[in-house]
Each structure stands twice: as structure tokens, then as C-alpha cells.
Amino acid sequence: MVYVLNFADMTDEERAVAVCLQGIVNRSRKCLLIDADNYVSYVSGVEKISIDVYSATQKFLGLLNGMAVYKLDCHDVGINMAATYAAATDALGVPDVLVSKFADLGLSVNVDLREIDGSNAERQRKVFDLCYDKLNKNGLIHQVVNGNNFHIRLRDLGICNRWACVYTGESEGDRAFRQYVLSKLNKNIPVYGWNDDEIAFIKDISQFGDYALPSDWSLNHSFFGKSDTSLKQKLHGNASRVPSNKHYVALVVSDGDNIQWLERDFAVTSSYGQRLETDCSYKMSWTFSPSLVSVCPAGAKYIVDRAKEDYFISGVSGIGYANCLSYPRKYLDEFAMQTAIAMAKSDLSVLCMLDNVAETADEKSVVDRLHCFTKFDTIKGGIWELDPDRYGSGQGKVWWSDGKPFVSVRFTLWYPTCNMADVTTDWLDEIAAKVNSMPIAPSSECGYSVVNVHPWTMNQQSVDYFVSKLDKSKVELVYADELIELMKKNVRR
Image (tube, rainbow, N blue to C red):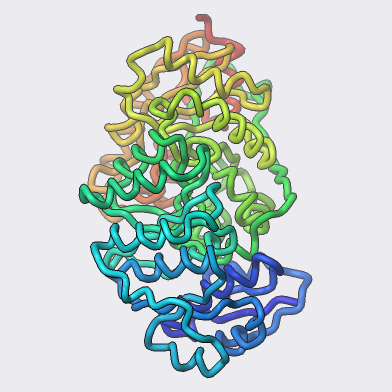
């Protein structure tokens, strides 16, 4: 039996309470679900009963340890402080305007977080330090609280797992607090959520030996997580059936590390989602987070089972988003092992990574770090997205480790304005012409190209048009694993 709270029917204050309640309840019994987006589609074979947040609180009153009162405000970190306090003590986080209603249900005030003063970083640190001994150090929620960029979602996962929940901007005080929190937690742990500055955020997380899972729009992970589900892709490439004497091109869609996109927009037909009702006559490879099978296994299975001619590879950079070239070397072997295990569970054999091209200057160091991954038989090789030029800074360069190629993006379908509406056919024609001009040279690295497809810039119609302009007499589209296998077989080094 599953109790279902309708997200649309609640006020923001009630939604905040529902997410907190869900985290506490689902720790002991996976029975509280919030109906929003596509999540109810992942639940079958059980009775669903609609319930409101007040009735749900009354039903599970015995699991709650009073209230943690805070002000719900899109500029205030009180909601994160309440989530951390709830994770440690099981106190239900309640916005101040609802205190009397929940007091009528039998809950007394355990702590009033409005009384804690200081900057956002200082206030969060006081709660973090207060709760530290009772917190689980194997994960972190980093949920944005910044005006228009504000989400009530996700925190149930941290509360369920007894993880801290924080938000840090890019001021000196905020970054110092971010680094303080990361220093107090274990290594090779997931940081769920997102931030305002991707580069600085991932840099800090990577340097502390942790990885990010973009998920600030996610819901219900406390309900769906912890499953033994394994995925099986419907198709894999077959290099032996690929025509000879062509220039081989793999279209690889980026940003599949973004689990909130996968479980929400990607899983349904949209302008940048899974190919369900569009042209499936050509081969595409999509990056896909191997962590999704752990945090939302039903959603992961839903996606893979409905795939037609799409092939999935691991999103950056394996188990989670990190810069592997700046990751502390002493922690990288564990990161790679977690990646290999998660990829195998998700039936993924090609690893996509994201770094800055400047970090690849030391060839010996690069190969040493790649060996952390290529020593696993289940990882065939990889695709490398290299900044700063919209993933195309590697210009097709290939790094080899244990006889396995890591192929950098040569061309990128990422429009400079980052606006899907701005994409023109002239621009697509120009890139298609560059691909058509590449040599037919199966024995050389220049005979193979990875074309990055940026989902926030390209819709499927634009990709269809681009493919229609490729010279089929010269260019052969292949899956990413076919590209890897063809290079291993044919390229002379």
C-alpha cells in the first residue's frame, strides 16, 4: 500500500512539510509518494491511496520527534537547516505559518531555527556542527536556495539517509563553508543537488574526492531508492556488421549525468528527450547516469525498457560528475571501482568523462589515471568531453590505456548562444560539411569522429536535419561501443 500526496494540490509550505515527512517515514517503510511529474508511472502492482499532508502526519505521528520551525523563504536557508536537523533528530521541519496546524495534531516545537543568527553560511554551520555526531557522513544534499533558483524538492533523500543538507554560493564565506563540510565527510561520496556556478562547484567537490549528481528538481528518491534492480539494454553495437571503408561517426548526447532530466523530462516525449515518436532510423548514443539504477531504479528500468534504436553509455564521469584529472589520485581507484560496479549493474560499457583540455598536458599522468578505469574488463573504452570549447577542445585526440581508446569530441552540436530557438540550418550545414570532409581512414585515429549533441541546445528535429546532410557514401553512423571496437581492431598505433 502506497500513500500518495498530490504535489499540485498543496501550498509551498505544505509541500516543504510533505518532503520532510516523506524522508522520515520512508526510512523505515517505503510507503509515502509525492505525485508530480512522471513518478507515479514508475509505481505498479500496489494499491495507491490519496492522502493530504495533515492526515499523513497524523498517521505517522509516532515516527516524529516534534517540530523544527523555520521561515520558508526563497532567499533563506532555513529549509536546509530544518532538513539537516530532521535528518539527525526526526523532528518534522515545519514553516512558521503552519506551526499551529501541526501543533493541533500533537507536535510540539523541538527547536526554532529562526533564532539562529548570522550569515547563511554561519547559520548552516551552527546546525551542521550541532547535528554532526548524529549525521551519516556518506552523502550530502546541496540544494539551491537563491531567489528564483529555489526548490522544495530532493531533501527527502538526505533526511531518509541522515545526510546534511546545505547551500553554498560563490562568496568567500560560502565557499569556505562548502569546503569545511566536505572536509568533515567521508571520501568518494555523492553530493546530490546543484549549484549556481558549475565550474567552481565541481572543482571543489572533485578536489575533495567526491562527485556530484545533478538532481535539484528530483522527487521521491527516499521512496524509490535501495533496490537490487539491474538493467539490460535492448541492443548493443555489433562492429562486425558495420560497413567497411567509411568515416565512422558516433553521435553522443551529453548531460546524461543529470538524473533529474532522465527521470522527469527524458522519460517522456519532449523536445530533448528519449526518441519515442521521432526518427529512429539512425544510430544515437545517449549518456546515462549509472547511479540512476540505485536512486530511482523503477525510472531507470522504465527508460531502458522503452528504448528503440538508442544505445546508452555512462554519463560523466561514471558513478557521478567529477573532474577525474583533478581528483585526488589516492581516491581515484575507489571512484573507478564504484564506477565499474555501477556501470555493470546498468549494462553500460563505454565511459564518458568531462575535463578541461589543459589538464591533459601530462600524458603519463593521464594514462595512469585512465588505467584506474581500463583495468576493469567491463569498461571497453571511453568518450572524452573537453572544455573550454563546448566539449570540443580535444579536437578528436585519442588517449589509449590498456589497449582501450578514450576518444575526445571532434565536433560539437552546441549552439554558441545556448538557445535552442537560435539554431539555424546554415550552422548545421556548416558542421555537416566538416564531418563530410573527414578522411576515410580506418587504420588511423583521424578516421573516427565523435559528435557531441547538446540537449539544451539541440532538439530532435535539428539532429534529424543534421543527419540528413551527412554524405552517406562516405560517413557511417555507429554506436559509441561500435566506434570503440572498430578503433581497437583497426587503428595502427
